[in-house]
Image (tube, rainbow over all chains, first blue to last red; front, side):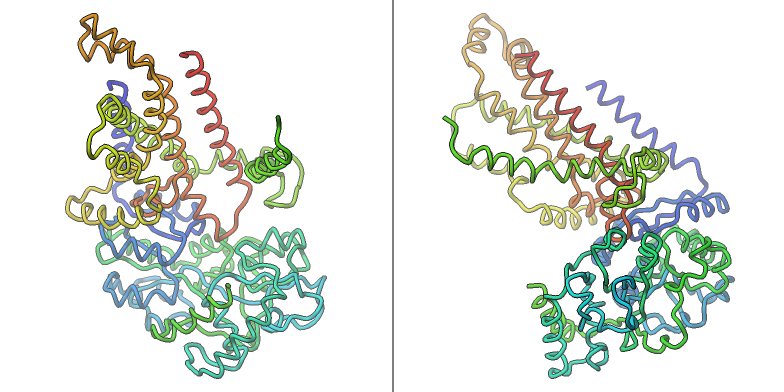
Length: 343
Length: 259
């Protein structure tokens, strides 16, 4: 018992010593493996603030924990289609990043986003697109199309991976069949379902993690995120990323401050801090996605700076769209198609 | 008298159980950044994991929680095992067994969500967000793991020694201290080891209960999965595997010596 007491006392000592080392604190709750340690270190040294980063693995986990209360976090980084839910449930502080000093650096493309018009709540963290990843050693044709995985050419049949993300798959499929996101057109959705079910036997997998599989040439094509396509190309130089002309979804994770945050001032400092090109460059260097801050490219590591995966060519920009939050009844139909597909 | 096909089935089972672990360990020594393409032997990823502040912090947190939770769980399990075996059967005893073993039966996600809701309330009321919640949660689900070997040991022990001690005017405490406890020791070690390894392993409950800055190694690894996984995770996992094997081996030798 004495030993146990000593151990507990030791633990308490460690905990208090850690807290006493800095003037302030900041608790960030972010996706796993997404926060650049270099960025955090720089922030800690600049503002003498001790930062604790905690990971989550899905938007729903994060939402569930914060909704329950008593979480102790200051900052969360939800995906674009989840931001309206956070706002609507009154979980976020209207931090007005649009009035902060460094807001001028935010790419005008990402200021008036439908899920936070004028950016009253959120600051861009990283963004990307879901598109066609293709090993051009296997298939030489046009890769800027969703037909890569929905109507695959014979060379690619049986070598395709499709991301197990309902929204990304549904978005690309609906646009491919000529519909708009959140459509309730029964005839069109039936065509979408039939097309997906027809295509599925031609896929090899519906899994996360494609980089190693492209390196080993297990996969020759995938519906996946552009940042992963960049890393796949690093290991297999013939891999290319296609922007489907029929339509592809953008995704963006944004930094927001929680209403019940304990360290609101430090959280605001962090928001302002990541809107400088130099610091945004650090974010991208770590997770290899674009960040939405103008001029950050010059601070990116060689290779990433002018990676074709990270900037959407002008001719394809119009084909991109947001996965907005559809009404619950629409969501229900999409979930049904999705479940049907997974069977 | 070996049954036909028994060997083959056993080998298939062992392969299915251990082959993934063997591959995980092999790729921890991969020189390239891939999880499936061999790029030569190296210790690069062990060095990387060793210098990764997040992995170090998460690992030490995992160990601290496991030690404290396993100690508490084993203490409680020992008392419970004594209370439920050194007694005549009575109405409600079976119910108590079921209650103690509840964490083994209830799906982990149910416990996790329930704890999230309850702890969140307490966190708001008290303002305390420390490690106490994780320790309490881990202790709770570790108790049955510590309890089962202890109860088995107590049930298998010869009662005549305890009766003899009582006959010789040893009071209950002395009987426990000098007769029961030494005989029970292997069971305690086994229970502690099981509880320790169970706590070290836990993902789901920890993911829901942890507050800010309370990443354990398993939840840290879970966070890595969606992005890109490097052999660094294999290296960290191999380190933990070695630790678990050591713990189990040590407990085996201790319990054998005491027999």
